[in-house]
Image (cartoon, rainbow, N blue to C red; front, side, top):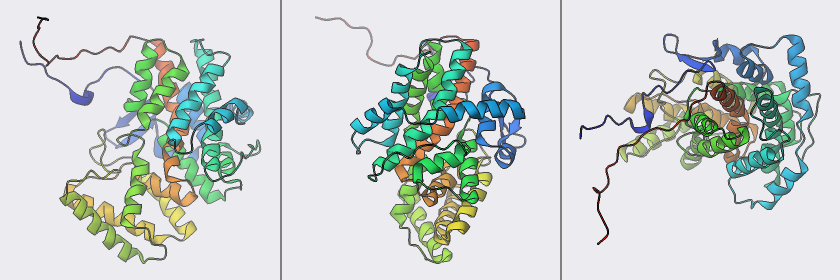
Length: 379
């Protein structure tokens, strides 16, 4: 038998078309429906970007007003979902909470089994509106705090921060959070999005596909990397008021030792980008603003020390998770809440792909090459 050309991890395999997003290798830009994401992050709200991903065009003022009114109406934490969250142990990872909440929301949705585009759009908006309350309450309950009710006078990002911390965020923090939500919203056929499309290809419902995508995102090699970045910072040791240069030297030494031991250090490298993740400069600018706002230069020292050592040893650049982790840390999010923030953002991209998959569906069912024992029989 001729040896098969196995594409481990489907590396380099093109499996379908998509009009949702692409990486322009000439400009090293991630494009959402043709728009460079750095331009969207600089000039748009997350609500506008969500609308773009789902509809293909940015909304008019009237369309945006209608869309945001719909989103605001769905912000409150469903009492049944709250009961389910309360029944889960605090030792459960917050991603398990997100996965469970998405499943409960799906089981309770009045259009759960309706696969029309109109119904799936309604379910996508409802999930988009509901997930911040889930993420916010789960962090709060772990600190012995109760639900903070949403406010309809705040935009999506400001309200998310309000429900999490119980106080209104200053504009600088709201802006940085909004930027992170936009940058995390979509990234073509990544592991979790492909998971969602595989599930959708069986004609399973939208919430089943999102629940599966959340499971895929939990892994350290995908969404969990932003948590791993902060675990690295913690291992090196975060010392408030430490001079930047000293923090950088400690981080550089740590990285050199880790690489010598052939440890995998999360937050660096990306299968798609060969010249650095195009989203990093925008997120790094947001991180710089948060470091200045909170007066925490030692975090910049750790960041620069690790980045320099990795570049000198391997010429590998940071990915989006690297600046996002410390940004969320400065805002006050628990480290294990970082990936649920990714969920809240990526719901937009996942559901855009779910609807696109259904428009020209074919069951995703690859083949495998068997390498077990030859045919044999019971004695």
